[in-house]
Image (tube, rainbow, N blue to C red; front, top):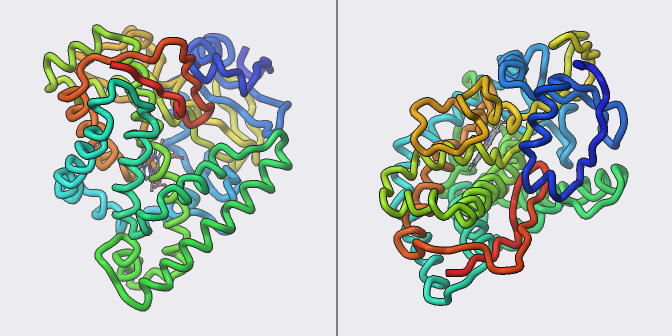
Length: 390
Ligand code: HEM
């Protein structure tokens, strides 16, 4: 059936809550599928080996400025550049995210985590998204980048305005993200201008002192890096914490195994990143006429690379529909793959581990509040109504 058109509702809440049925349908019946209708026509790629093939060939499947439109005025760096230009920027950014840099952030991340948990632990109930999943990674990230933490709520609202714009139609979405994008640029331009005058101990200052091929990054380059970071750093760890805690709240045996043996936590994180895949898909654009699994893909087609479908494919791991914290090999694609693989993965893993360790040490037994139907957002899977009781 490769190349056929299959209809489904992109905004079906049940599908956002559990997309695995749709993933299977696509892999089994339309592994490369053209979506000719809808606001953003394009091609879906869902099998593990095809997803990897796309991600490993940026010369054919580019993530350039046309692949995604989230209010950017210029390509976001490094995501919307292709190698070899992208590689130059990666080289200078990678050391900022190296494991030893992240290790140095662990104790302050733990302090903040404990502080946030202590505010709710005695209450017996909280909205985990509001109490922990949103404030913790946002604070860590804003401090790192060098944006004022006191304005976190405003920045989170701007980020949500891009990722989950209040819009019914594609035209409304475009106009909403353009307007919000302008506001994010204004924030970044202001802070970059301040750091041009006076450096501090933050990423923005570090980028201003960095060089690519012997040339300093310009303030505009730093703004274009900042735009991507703003969106990548403020949403993904929150979404991952939401998905992981929502799973554990609904699976008491899995949760008890972590409480009993916290050394399982790193493995559990990998397995739940695989099974839940908070960033469900990434976009690419075909740079030439090509073909995959017998399905023609015309130059200029938007290709939706379905990480979640690849991660729940038996071609990746045995019994991919089962959650197993004891898997020995788990090469999941929750952080992508190839040239654009996530730069923040060490940082994200550290934050997830610290939260799971500290939360389960204080709140070992919890569940979703009675009567609450968890509401997952599509695309980037946050659970804003993650009401827990214990
Ligand atoms: C669990 C949390 C996270 C998940 C699931 C995640 C997921 C991803 C994915 C799937 C990509 C690939 C995008 C593509 O190929 O089009 C990516 C790229 C990226 N991520 Fe993350 N991310 C997370 C956390 C973070 C954090 C905390 C930061 C920064 C503070 C970050 C920074 C980036 C950057 C800069 C890129 C672009 C890399 C490039 O284009 O070379 N990510 N991330």
